[in-house]
Image (cartoon, rainbow, N blue to C red; front, side, top):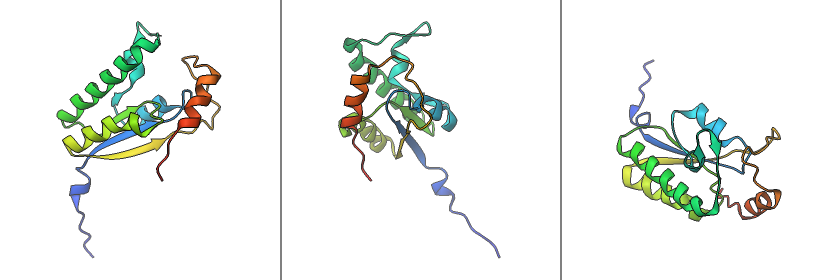
Length: 138
C-alpha cells in the first residue's frame, strides 16, 4: 500500500503565541519550539538586566510586534511570540499580522505547574490582576 502525503500542510507558515503569567515558563517553552522568538521582555532587558517601567511597556510591545513582522516578511516559520497576552486586545496585533502574511496561528497557554518564580519580580497584586483578566477562547 502506498501512502500519499499532502505536503502543503507541512509547508504552512506558523505563528505560535505562548501565553501565561510571569514565571510560568513562556520563554523557556518558546525556546523549545524554535529560534525566531519575539518577547517584549527582550526590549526591556539592557546588558542582561531587566528594567521594567510603565512608560516603556507600550514601546516594548510595539517593538515585539515589529520584530514578529520582520520574521514573517522573511517567511521564517515558526515564529514564536512569548508574552503574557492576557486579553484579546493584546493578541489582536499578532492575528492581524498573521492574516497579512498568511500565517496559521496557534495559541498555547503555559501553566505554572512547576511553581516557577517570575524573574522580573512582578508584585503579587499585579499577578492577581493578570490572572483575573486572562481571557481564554476554547
